[in-house]
Length: 87
Image (cartoon, rainbow, N blue to C red; front, side, top):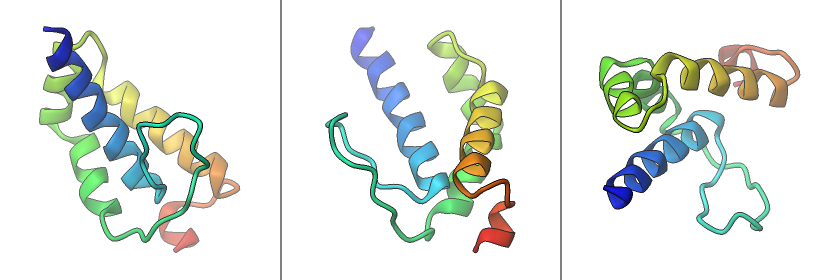
């Protein structure tokens, strides 16, 4: 069960990183690098979805809370601009 939990958490980490336009690394000491926003809209769609809520529920989290935090992190990293205005 622990492996399944780690896999689900990794999916959310990757989705949030894609949404924010950052590279994702398992190495927590790696510097944050910006990437293209090619998958940003797909990541946003997933994070807002019922599937995300279902997977979050499986590991004891709340999907809408993950989406709110991802939006908050993105807005703080862009100086309060919306994703469209920052693009």
